[in-house]
Image (tube, rainbow, N blue to C red; front, top):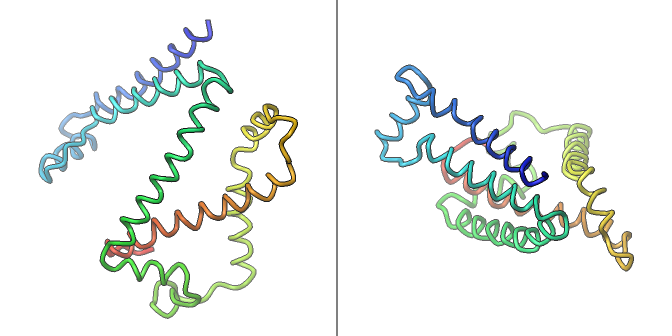
Length: 193
């Protein structure tokens, strides 16, 4: 019964993407997108989105049907390190783009954004603390329900106080690495941060 419901959910989600494909008439934004792709030589179309969406939904349903320890846990043992490796590859590519050093200066040199004219005035200490607090609470509490669920599967030998230090440290490291991947590429493309 659970497998049948999961497969039904996948079918419903895939069918929910069909209006995007069906709206590809001459006046629709989807048709403009397809025409732009044809003019620029791009090969991505709404059909490609539908196919990859269906593949993603099927893979997700398969993993969830295997359960927490047999599906999600096993996938995460491969998936999370793979995401980290992909992030490192993106960082390496981003740092090799011409003009990437401007992005690193923007991110790590205090006052550079003001001196270079990216912002009009320096933010107050209170606004910096409020923004940092908002980011901290968002990134650390986003998956609170998931963490409670995973916590119920923890082994009795796990040291929760050690994990309480590792999780924010890993979150901060991932945020810094994501910034190193994004900002050099943004500046290399001549975009505004």
